[in-house]
Length: 159
Image (cartoon, rainbow, N blue to C red):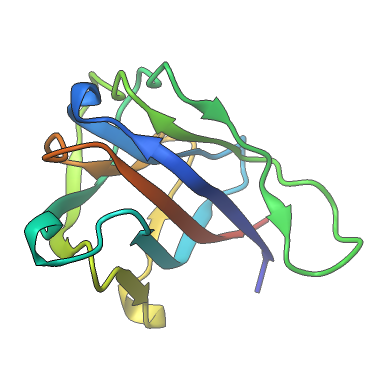
């Protein structure tokens, strides 16, 4: 087993005007492939039936051009005192990653009132290497109205 890290954002506004957003972007370092173990997403601002909506997400591997308009996010080791991650991470890119030969790995939707907890079994984990460049978790369409979101991605770095 490699080293485990979290990449997260908390209580951040995702605006209707943003349209499609890359919630997470992971770019592995040379010879240090990454595997995603779990993904958690939640919305804390949409309370009540009138505000209910289903958000569509997709996990995509293979974009060459990184997104922009987001935040460079430092992966945090789960083991205290472990070394810094070699991979780079960004959250909430409002200009999504593009170009390259992409593979859609997972498509889903979640109700904003229930959140999206997904823990992947070993056989189902999403992997990415420097050769296939980037893994993104993308919000596939604009939210109906501005929402406050939080999310955590659990990433293993091998090598």
